[in-house]
Length: 138
Image 1 (cartoon, rainbow, N blue to C red):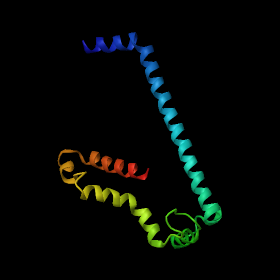
Image 2: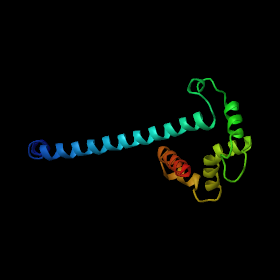
Image 3: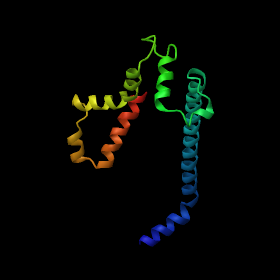
């Protein structure tokens, strides 16, 4: 009976199945292309920031140390609307903001980490944490 059903599916619905799979492949290809364009735009904006604002040439990017980048960021004019100049602490706070946001959500009880781990698989709890981190970037 199962073989008969498989044979029927192969013969009767092969063109429709091929169209559905082709449509899914086209949607996936469009999604990947759109994501690549977005990533390229982000890369160009970061490159522009390093080249124009921080005045770091492309050749120096691989040998530039972190403290030099922070020094250039703190000396760059008007990177922050609230302050005239950023400090090293401001730069560190901006970098750690995403993690601190997630920690604050857990501490306030909005995201209960121990009960989630009890009834969710570990990979799903990790995916939830990544989702919260990604949403805090926006």
